[in-house]
Image 1 (cartoon, helix red, strand yellow):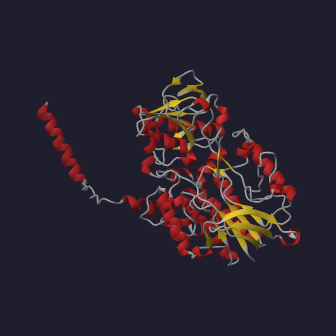
Image 2 (cartoon, one colour; image 1 turned 180 degrees about the horizontal axis):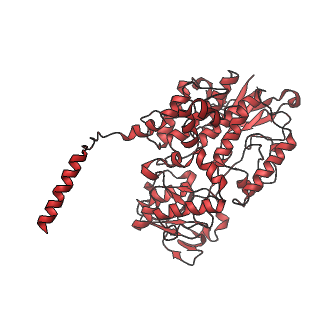
Length: 516
């Protein structure tokens, strides 16, 4: 059986995962790379290393808890080298088309046309195709939403094109959009620009990567016990609790960040520095842009900023797969309806899967890894999907549930709830941890799985792809959190006995009496 895995290196880590998952089942694979996503130099991941690593390959203990782009690339290379995956990767290969073979209903095979770095076109036949391109490939530039933008004399770019703040030194810049990229770029620009303005239509809840006792945010928040408790409480009450907690750090209304939605209804912005830059006056929050008039920018609240030199659009991305058959899309917007965010239900044979086409409030890589493990088994015939009618109903149910928070149907279809989603996929693979069994059989691990961080190693404790090192990885995950921070030897404070404390107290009493 031959497989084709389309993967854009730098946009999505699932290409490596699917090769590894496939070799667990079939031992044969091909995986070309088509393009490379542009990222700004200072980007840092928003999920900590213990929560985002591959389930059978922890990041080195000396890696920082939140890695930058170059360190993450180093980790990918370590992973590929450890599992001997480089020989299966075809770099600088463009995919022209992916089409079903004439006998697809019987064979399930695909005809794939590729072009290599020298311009040579080749046609291949594969038994399975996996698309691992993610959904950050097509930048959205809504220029028509801003009247008069054609009169603006300065530069206008999308965040996809942004690299660093050097071209904007001493300038006045408006950043439109307050997602994670918008927050990062606005903060970086505020250190170089004369003035930076961050325009937002709806506002956002902004939280840092570090929470109580200086621990990583996701290792504290993403826990099974928390999800269980939250599921028992009214949604509005849980939102209110978290809003009050994060408003204690800084009042979102005071800082001009207050959003129109509740904190659990949409994605939060992860940013450690944004409130500080606002407090220093280098960054100013603004309402939605109403129009442009030359170098003047008018906002919905009636305010105007003059002498603007540049505009950076942090207005998101669209996802398109022009190389796929149009029959896989539903609707005029080219939307893809996917069962469990992976499988098109319209295919006669489930030999094509799309990985990483979802959004969640948690680490992407562990979820994509489970997608890859399940997809490899389905395409290999080791697992089976329900009938198409049931898959369509499941998709519609998920979209309707998400429409309450995400009015756009295309965005609603992308949302998944982290732990419930990865557990559902893990059950399909046969690797979801049995908490009750663990608590009885191995309480040291069971307690950590239920009460501790929902780290990826949990999905290697049993079942297909079992990893003998998973138990130890769970028991030592906090050691790897602490390791990169132990760069200074700190002596233990001297201990006092009871008599020492009594003597000290008596001496203090005598001094007080004397002074009196």
